[in-house]
Amino acid sequence: MTSISTVGHADMAAVPKVKSRNLSLDRARTFLTLVVLIHHAVIPYTYFGHTDPKSFFGFDMIILATDSFFMAMFFFLSGLFVWPGIARKGPLNHLKDRLFRLGLPFVICAFTVIPLAYYSFSLRQHPEISFSEFWWKTITVGPWPSGPIWFLWVLFSFDVIACLLYRQSSHMLDPINRLSLHGRRRPAVFFAVMLAVTAAFYIPGRVHFGASNWFEFGPFSVQHGRVMLYATYFFFGAGIGVQMMDRGLLAEDGRMAKVSWDWLMLALVPYCLLWGLIFIKREILGNPPHLPDWYEASYAICFTLFSVAIMFLILAYFLRFKHSGWSILDPMQGDAYGMFLVHYPIALWLQYWLFDYDLPAIVKATIGFVLTVAFSWALTRALRQIPGAKRVL
Image (cartoon, rainbow, N blue to C red; front, top):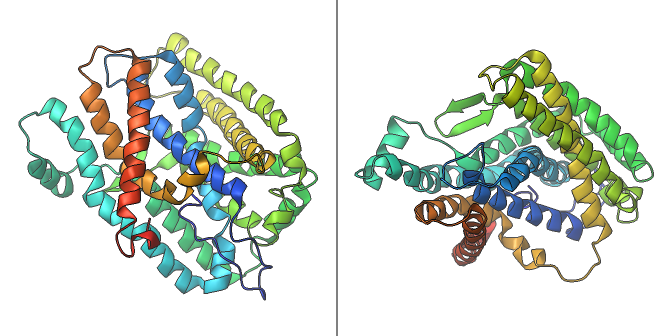
């Protein structure tokens, strides 16, 4: 995410100077952070993550949408500033900075935030277990889930690959950059190419691994079928950021922002088709543990189209309304990354507390979301007061 990315000026010998901040991208990044918090606030009250006695179908609609795009878009936004960062600092220094910004939080969260979050689940089944017992079992015996912090180590891995590619040739991603410059006037061309490449890399993995297969090694985990999907988003972002990002696809005065609602219509069709496929899976196929290849391929095609279209819609919206005045997202920008890191135990413990209350799912989710935002924001603000913490958070 751009909150994880260091936005700087590129070496003018390699990359033309870019603006140090981009309000549209800052707001998009902060908006995505709130989407993460919404996702984790409502998921207990859905068919998929039914861990609470209450449920609400509207939350299933939210989860289907968010799960289909938000992590991929984080990788896209993170990639935007990679190439200028490598050009300015050099590959080795860039990786050192990323190790500090990504690796250190990953280690700290893996040993503290994640066990604290999942202890709430353990107490439901084993109310007698102490936190120290649960923590020791987690890191020695397992399972050692990663929660949302899997994003950090995967992002760092992509940074490593980007540095290796840069050492091979600093012009490696120039074709994507030229496509971005062309996309200023014809964003549909960029959309079509990105859709085709993303589909080519995602669909085979989805068919082979299915939707729920995860690589897991201690706290290191990632969905097998989505690794290449995330990689394509990251490197398309990196290609846009090679040079003249403010004159390409994401230009303030470009065509993309002027057709923002067209992307909405383009996203609605595959979203509805996804629900059709879910109905087929549950009501016709009988919700089997292993789905036929034709089903996985069909779902992957709709998933990919929706994912790219909804990302274009969000980017177009924030580009279009960049100068719309003050936004609640603005004061939250500097704390967005910290909120992403610390919110998970807050969200899960609030759900643990709300579990026994006989309240509608909408009420529970609203309370959980509002308090998760408030507490994670306040905690991040407090942590950022620690000397040196702002370099990480």
